[in-house]
Amino acid sequence: MRIFDGGSDADLREAALLLRDGGVVAIPTETVYGLAADASNPSAVARVFAVKGRPDDKPLPLLVADAADAARLCGGSMPPAACELAERFWPGPLTLVLPVSGQNGPPSVAVRCPAHPASLAILRHAGVPLALTSANRSGEPPPATASDVTLSGLAGIVDGGPCAVGRASAILDLTRDPPEILRHGAPVFGVTGPSGAGKSAVLSQLGELGAAVIRADGVYHALLQSHEPMLRELRERFPQAFPRSGLTFDRAAMRGIAFGDPAALTALNRITHTYVIAEIRRELARVFLNDRETPAAIEAIALIGSGLDALCSVKIAVTAPFETCLRRVMSRDGLSREDAAARLQNQKPNEYYISNCNILLENNGTERELVEKTDAIWKIYGKGDTA
Image (cartoon, rainbow, N blue to C red; front, side, top):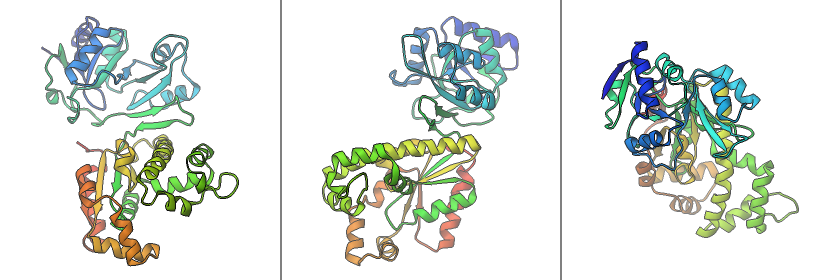
């Protein structure tokens, strides 16, 4: 295997030739090191999947030298919004999912123009778009230096020094209107745990530290007020939750239907989670377009089961002793001890949240101690060090 000097144009030309000949080469970008192959060569792309151990049903994003190359991949032109975003963010850590027209094949393509001189030079010398995925085995941290690339089966590695960003690019889906974020470039904190554990306090502190905060419950309640597609689907499945004419949803009636009926609760979550996640993706897109370096924080009791955890690079389980949660729920919601206990016992236990998150925040002290614990998490992960 050849090690190429990312500062040598002669070496970069040789690496480009290897790619044109069907080889898989690890190359630097400003985000992480990636496994690259000639996107027009199916055998070379298949080798990328084999080297990485990635399922071959997940298509690879493509690197392009400029917006003109991206337009050709889309069938000749990009949507106006994509042109504006490319002008604003390319070269840079933003992958755009674009519609493809006028040809047989997939209806969309994910493309990015990297902001690294070595990868841009390789793209120009190769003269073809490059299929790219991070140069690590699936499930392992992506490499930020050439020495971090330890995969076998490569034709070469281009050493372009440490990656400036060190985390994966944002992915913005422009096949949807309005656009949705599939992956936020800056860190996304997922905050979850049982009722009364202190999730809202942790979310508020993350907001004070600079994160854009999103409360899944707030998104859900807003959709219940005016989102006709979701309300129509709910009315079709749960007509008894719409006792009045039109699309006026009765939350108390719905609680009575779903409480103690696992099948009804599953159906309710299947409908509502789809719309809530889509709206949160749109909110993350707005956050990114305002400032791509702004971290986000999502609070959701159903963060894990809903699929929202797929948006999060840092998942925080906030827990507290049962009696503490009980007192908080009684005080906050005006419930009797019996009703508050029934609510908590109907939720997942602490162990569920702990086992599905990578950070445990035990809220078993004072409010000040909770703030300090949240600050400590931010210091580690707030700038994107999520490996």
